[in-house]
Image (cartoon, rainbow, N blue to C red; front, side, top):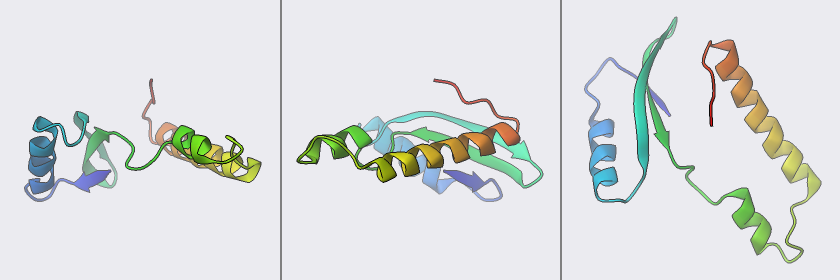
Length: 91
């Protein structure tokens, strides 16, 4: 999630309150500046079930190969975008 920092960040305040009551995990926040401007980056849990949850709910306890291929492709595309913008993904 990112937000252009040209207005007060009411969303960040709301997320901080939610995190203080353990409704979400807001692990970290930081800003990045690029040719698009300064953006607020938030590190949160994934909003939805994990692939492991989906796999375990399947009658065969497996996922179809096209789902796995699509998921891996999406992750690689996002990592490539981070890499191309000069950011390094860790963890």
